[in-house]
Length: 521
Image (cartoon, rainbow, N blue to C red):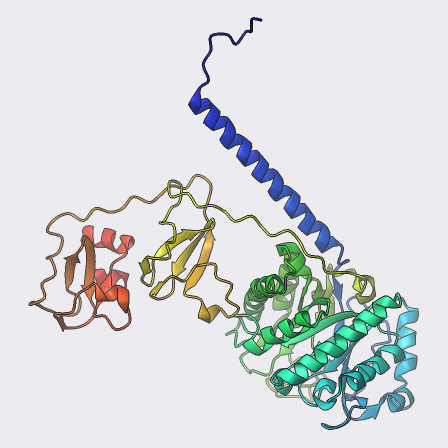
């Protein structure tokens, strides 16, 4: 039977091209499906919500139940703590038992009035100044009963555990706390009720502290389905740009959460992780005199949170959301009842809540589900702008490599340290992520060093700081006076070696007539 293809041979290059296109299409389709699943998981967490913290026991009393305008819809009432360091009795700031708060503060009545307006209440346990119940109650069942007493009295679907100071430092108390909360959450869900759990933790621009990551791990290990981690984006020593520092801290937290959930066997995609992040700035004057969250900072932080899909926005505190009066002259000292900033007609609650249209109650039913992990990118030396990382190669500070589709730069000498090792604290990682390999990139041409550019290293010669030598085809510059020290030692111990290898950019500078000191000798 004849065919219109009779006599034609299969073109190998054409077949290879077809297979490459097919692989790209399949990969792109898989990535699209994965990203859609991640987006769907993120949407299942409900609309992001805003609720400002209210210090229940502070004077003057803040009327959280009154409708005061945009941004005041929901409230995080704080803080439930132990009556004393050895008591398992929940109180409001040690000043009122639950019954006393109902009588003296009309708290139950005010909460119901707020709910009659279709607004919501979250209760926060802990804070910095008193003893969190998990530290005071030494029995898991008694601790669970203490938490449940508060949850049931105020019909809560969302709780907030503000853990800082001493509450972060006792592993046994943390394990007890996590076990009690896991037990309560399981029981509530079995009864058809919801209990969303947020951890509110201190943060720096580098992310959570080691105590903070240990806290998250303890709750995940206990089986708590965390609604999210609320970062206290305050007192960041930001040098007049608190919004930028807060954004950096949230980005670091996003990276850390990815590692923590992977370690718990519950991989989450990027969008899902953002829904598990909350931000709580301290409005106006912070405790550090140099840190002031301006109105513009609030706008910028809100825009960053909305762009990335942050799940929650709060602030400390609603009590402080107003301009200080003339009788409070030193606004650099933090006040419990005003912001220390001339707010004019603006409110921080209105600025920070913009676009956060959900409520805590709406999101309480969300469940965390494991997502498919991202496919590992295979690096191609033919298309990588820098050498592909090799575990046997030593790398000096400033070296750039490609690994799993990303470019990294070495912070110090290292060998055998994969650039994408899941390190929770950034200071432990010898590599900094620069960004992804871009389409169409090719290897940067290696600079050939012409003969005579520098003398060959001689073990008998004396070299002053700034002297250049050629050794095994690499240019080195002396960091200080040296004789008899081989440049090869720079790879074994970069800090103690008197020699530093020049990178490709520095070699170009030298060949153009510049000095190696231009690259940082």
